[in-house]
Length: 243
Length: 110
Image (cartoon, rainbow over all chains, first blue to last red; front, side, top):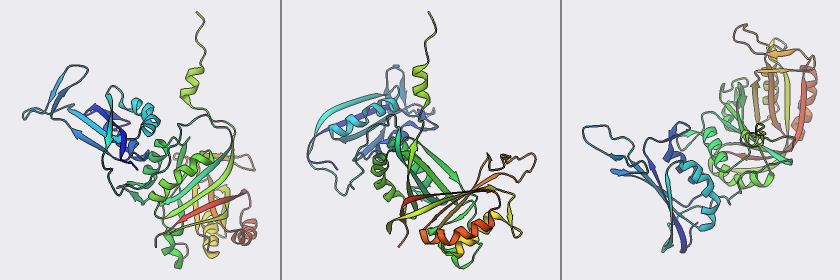
């Protein structure tokens, strides 16, 4: 939660129509800020503007207004911004990011305390934990499927990896209605998410799980990580061809 | 409501064509779990795998093969596991049961 005093205001300039993994870029960035526990963010749409390419983009009545400017603004502490800036730069792509010192006179109220910031994921080895989350396929969170929201939240929090499984049959605490009728069970309704990371990272993520999962089961077990490699790392180690 | 406790996680592996007294094995095991009051059971169908007999199980749309690898995840208390194990011994003719101790957080409405 923001405290009165020194803070930093970040403004990101994008163009409407830019997408990231098939969704509008601004919503991707907004999701990222949200799941990383930023105090608040606002997206505004410009009516005209131009960017690095010096093309004028304006909303005219007669033509389809395309690539209008979009501005995302948020205010946070310096430490928090330092922790998310590199990921933000990556997300913003060709857009411009501006930061300015500001002073919070009065913070917004009713902001819930979010999970502490976790460092970006590093190579993990040895002792770790597996977190399995059992939910129902019909569960929603902010009008999107809960399992999708959880995956997005985990990605924003740099959890090393997660896989979603759809069960073909099952029942659980939240489907207890069927208890009086044995063998009546919801089909295509069981979802299990399986995530592996260090105990600290997973524990730090739990407050968000608390908030998002209304009904379900979360199971922790100790695991040993034998190998964790990802493609970005592999391409860096490819030997350069002989000169 | 949020509760935290320690429990067991059982994973039962077998084939989709395995049966018990005429019922598909996963349905039979699930019925047994419900009878014991076990709260969380999910059945997964794998896309490929092999088991003790080293026969590769594959679910294919073309051959309508029913022999896909199956996995059941069962979260239960020690006491429920002790009561379920004899039934599993009896019902699973060919397969594998793996158990681990887990920490559980249960979320439920009201």
